[in-house]
Amino acid sequence: MAIQVTDSNFEAEVLQCDLPVLVDFWAPWCGPCRALGPVIEELAGEYTGQVKITKMNVDENPNTPSKYGIRAIPTLILFKGGEVLDQVTGAVSKSSIKEMISQKAL
Image (cartoon, rainbow, N blue to C red; front, side):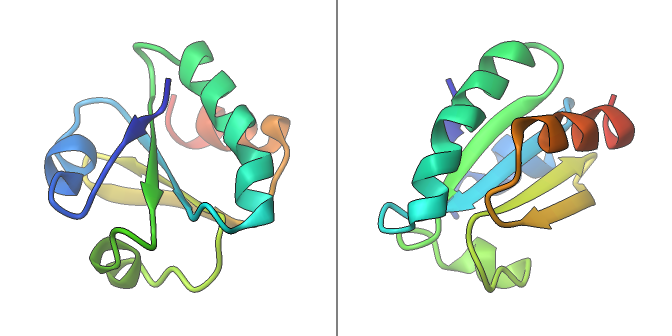
């Protein structure tokens, strides 16, 4: 299951994580975000132990999305070693996300 991250635990859960981390910036009112939700959960199961899959509600956590220039949701950002490796905005396919992870993080 995808881990919920917040402004307060973002540094510990994402930036200081030894694994690559995919963050799904989303909101409950966003249709494309809700459509992407099950895909994110599937990926969390598939990448257990390889990539940490997380979700951040942008309505409840305004600071982190602002820091990373999130202007549209859903936005997925792939981090490794505290650095941004890749970013994609919009409801992208599961295969596109897997390709991004395999090319950039594994």
